[in-house]
Structures are given as structure tokens and as C-alpha cells.
Amino acid sequence: GRIEVESDWERSTILIDRPSKHNALTPEMLEQLEQILIALDSDRDVRVVLLTAVGDRSFCAGADIKRFKALQPLDMWAHWTRLGHRVFNHLARLRQPTIAAVSGNAYGGGFELALACDLRIVAEDATLGLTEVGIGTLPGWGGTGRLRDLVGAGRAKELILTGEPLTAERALAWGVANQLAPRSRVIDAAHALANKIASRAPIAVQMAKQAIDAGGAY
Image 1 (cartoon, rainbow, N blue to C red):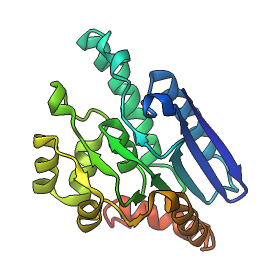
Image 2 (cartoon, rainbow, N blue to C red):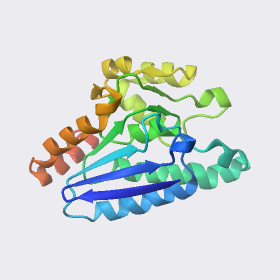
Image 3 (cartoon, rainbow, N blue to C red):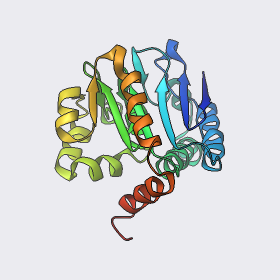
Image 4 (cartoon, helix red, strand yellow):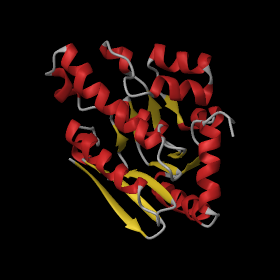
């Protein structure tokens, strides 16, 4: 599996490429994502970043369970959890606005990845879930706080404590999804939104993102 980036002048697309494993993330893929984000942060031309995945069966199934099952709990915390935290925080704090094009289901760390983006376009038949309590763990890559900030504590607790997935319709009603689209049209809808944002004054857009994330402290 790999994470790649394609730049089309003002718009960059980050692509998760491991469809045979539901685009599950390995530590190596997280490190690739981190290098991509470092480069994007210093790229003066890129105004908006899309995050997509190969295939429309799964956006991302989260952490590769086979890889972290082999770790001792302390090793899991010291490497895997902290690495994911660092990379997802970098994504959330990226200078440019980010749009997750969620063409398939997003579970665990895959849903946390979408939550670390600014905006989400979701396939109308996709489901999104933080299902970790079912396997005796909890969302470890910042999804607890990001979901709470997005939907409030009561709804965040309902999702995380039951592990039940959200339907796309409920995700839209709760403000988790900005837009729904048919599976085959999700990327097109994300491009249309990206182009609209890219046509606006870029410094104003980036400062507005920062002001919102700072809780209106500007």
C-alpha cells in the first residue's frame, strides 16, 4: 500500500492506494502521508487539498489490524498511536483547506482521517463508524475530540460507546458530511467544491480556516 500525491497547479490530491485491503493504513503509509503534508505546507501554489482513496468499496478501513496486533501495548502506544496522532494533527493544521472525498465506507482510523479534514463529501450509501470498542480499544488518532467538536458530546458518545456506524443521511443531518453524492459522483462533487474554494482569495481563505480552528480568537 502507498499514499501518493498528484498536484494540478492550485489543487493537490492525496490518494490512499491499497484497495485490496480496504485502504487500511500501515505505519509506512502514515509516514508517507506525513512527508506529503510537509511538502504541501510549504507549497505556495496549492490552494486546496483533496483526500481520496482508490476504489469506491472502502474509503479507508483504518489501521491495519494485522500490523498492530503483533505489537505489545506499550509499543503500540509509543509508535503506532503517537505516529497517527502526529500525522492527523498535521493534516488538521495544514495551511490549505482540505476536503475528504469519501466514496466508500470509513471505519476507525479511516473515519478519523476524514474528521481531520475541513470538509467531507460522502457517498449517499456509505457508512462511517468509530467501531474500536468492539475490539477492546478506542479511537486513538484524535477522532474522539474532533467528533465531539463537530457534533457535540452526546452524539459523539453515542457513536463511540456503541460502535454503531452512521448512515450517510444521519452524517449529513449531524453536520459530519457537508454534502452527499452518488458513489460515482463523489470525486466530481469534491472537485467542484475545491475549485470554488481555490477561486477565492487564498490568504483570506487560509486565515479564515485558522480563525475558525482557533475558536474565534482572531
